Image (cartoon, rainbow, N blue to C red; front, side, top):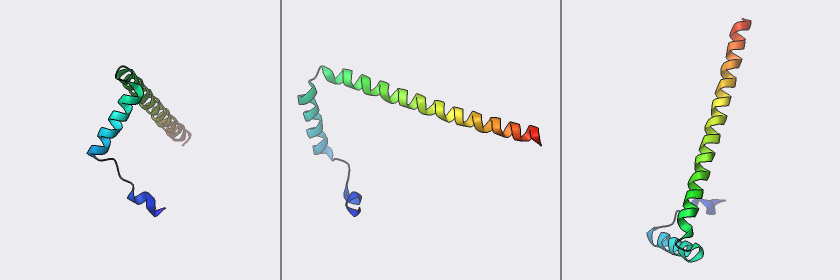
Length: 71
């Protein structure tokens, strides 16, 4: 468990190696397509998160209105 505390993010040189590995594996033409897909996925996730938050808030407001009307 304590070993998890020592994990850190990659440094500058490590990022360069990661980028080169991605270029070798996917090729230069596939990376923009991959990034577009990643961006679309993140956008859809954020939209879904916002919708769930909005539905929860509406449900709480409706519950409060019913409680006030019953008083």
